[in-house]
Amino acid sequence: MQSGATLIEDNAHGFLSKDSDGNLLGTRTGLGITSIRKTVRLINGAALHVSGNENLSLVGNQLNFQQSRLPKGFVLRKLSAQIQRSTRVPALSFFQLAIRIARLVTTGSRLPRSTQESETELPSPVAPHSSVLKLIQSLEPSAEILRRQQLFNKVLGRVKDLDIEPIFHQLEAGTSPYGFAFISGRSSVQRVQKKLRGLSVEVIHWPDLPDAVSVADDHFYRNVWVVNFL
Image (tube, rainbow, N blue to C red; front, side):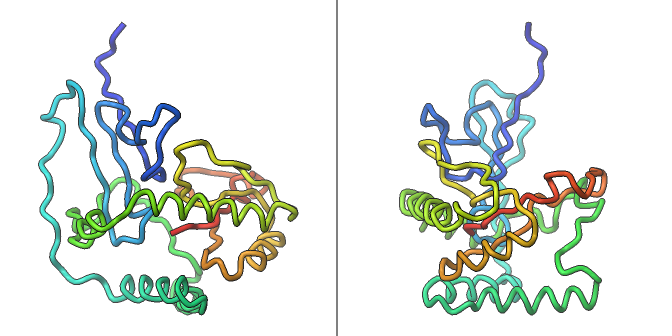
């Protein structure tokens, strides 16, 4: 029985990953959305995949790329990340610490707070920046996938004896990992950070739940962390 519903695949964190049949995530239904900026350091960027007999009237035209300058904060963050990755000098860590201290002083929170409007309103401007196109044209998928897979195994090897619970102990074939996710209390997270020094990675609290979702303090969602491979 057909319902007339349109199935949309939301590939938020699986850019470059494939399923067991070798199909790219985000391309397995008539309409698929893939976020790129969550996997690669970009100011914005996503892709909409359309196939089959879907009603194309549902889909807008390709947006023109923005030609504006990148925000200074993003440029500094990207530059510090490149310095940290190539020299092992913790430039990104220092930059993030300074930003979080400033945010704590001005807003009372070290991390950005989600707003109710972010759940319903599109960011502005909506068009992708021209840097997205440059990245896609220069990206070597096989090299990026290999880097992430090797990083996953390195992280696992360093933290496997700590008092944490990895959510995945191994990678399925075709996986390009967004990061290394685990469940842990804050005391063990500090030990994880020490073990990973020199890998130029960041350990962040995840997920960021919207205000409408009420979760008790002892719920495991409050203790989910990810080693970000960005």
